[in-house]
Length: 466
Image 1: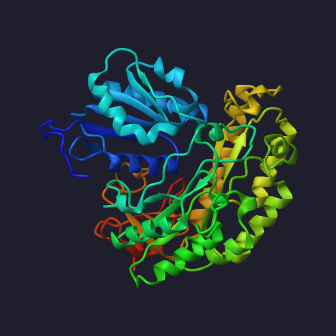
Image 2 (image 1 turned 120 degrees about the vertical axis):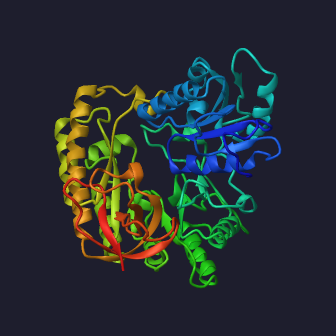
């Protein structure tokens, strides 16, 4: 996509992409931006001070906070770019179209199943006034198309770690989750296209690629011959073999969130190879068996602990994080305490803590014994205190360690007050954020570092290039 500056004459409408939510959404936004014909539209993925004619907001609705963030993005774009036409697509556009239609000044609502029609949507805006254009899906919710390897012509302008969506949609039946209604059934990108995409990123100089999706552990279950491999472990093995032919300058591969019961021994054997980051995010949701059963999760605490022990045994030094959902309907104080105690015993390295959000269209929304908002807030606060302690332990555990850090650019606003803004932000393979001295290297470069002691209450550790 040709670069464009805010001062360039408006020969092509400037289209700003704003992403709310998960890594899959980030990958989708990049795909949509690249799909715009460059002779018709100028795609922007960084917000300029002025001069935007169209804002495309790729929405999320997995929680009330995510839906609120989507609404805030609409208001922010309207305030910052008066007169810009606002198009909302993504998950909230799929499950809450009516709400968005009433949210001024939205000009069009495009569900996930019609994201592939975005170019036609933007063209239609020219001659449209009045009520928002609404593009109804032609059938059941469908995952967004995967990005073709041939579309990868450059590294993402804002990210040093490209997000590659290898799977979309979900066939799970978790009682609290709206994602299957928003994203449709599980679908995998054929392995040949995944391999070609990663090879392309390697050729362009990416030093880390993040494999992402909605239900990554189910990769390949929908594929039929000759679209092999048909499991995540087989795909990762093929990636390792393919990149081995590239010589020294090849990217490390990071796997995004994966369900604990899908971390098989075969998968761990592949992840033990040097190319893969020793970092896994294993959603837990609750540490109480009764709550897990009501949620519709497919494991109990014994099963979770068993897989967690296998991960740590096969991947020494691995960093493990977890999602925890607090205040699910019927969660008693005793169940919450058991969950808290279980999380402490698991010794996670960090937590993502969420308060339960009632989402229309889910089984949990009709359950009785909804937990009061004040109780949820208190429990979330308790778990976040524990999460801070666990995270401090992660930073302390890596003090004095030699590692490789990917330079993400100037620390700037990513600092926490303990480091100057002129230092560089870096990330190790084990997901430890570090602060590097100015001049440590170029953005996107992998450099060998020695990790120092993190300041008390800090969110990253100092590191020196060695």
